Image (cartoon, rainbow, N blue to C red; front, side):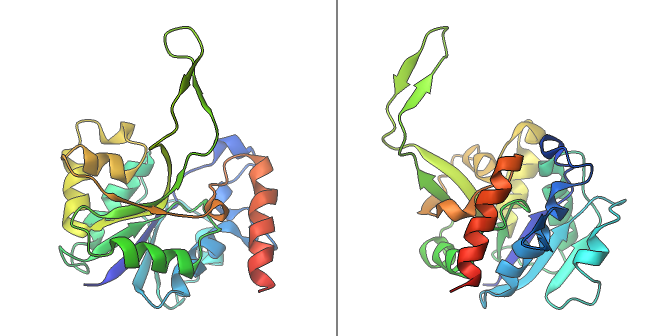
Length: 229
């Protein structure tokens, strides 16, 4: 089977409050999206990388030139992350086989490395229900449900990361059949609605999602560590 990366990058990143989509924020002098894409380009396991942007995106051509090898930009982004992924999967139909694996990855996770891609493929690459990178919860978890404060046991709790990898046909079916796909926060939850259990593969803190301004410094720290190795 082949492995393909699909990166939804049509969001506006409103919480970052920088006036343009956060995937184009500079990290160590290079756009965040470029760091994210290059993690897949440096992996020998990935056959091709597809990036979904909004039809009116005016930045991507400068970050990912049309002649850039190994990458195709799809201008089919939707109003939500899941809509962008669904639109991208539909366009991939002629290029991807039903059993080929699609690795869906957040554009705002620039700390991904080829080693993490390799670990996900090695441990879950042939799983029928797919798999995803995730981190075990190590902090004490509190809940305010019900009006009071209670402690929730952390045993068995994980924080989902990306990439999340599934057979093409399975992922497309899961997103197309979800009762409310736009309310789904990650691809694995759509697959779980089919009664399947994707495999959890331990990721790394460096693969954090850049959401708030404070996250930029942390991401740059990890990227700096990689550049000196």
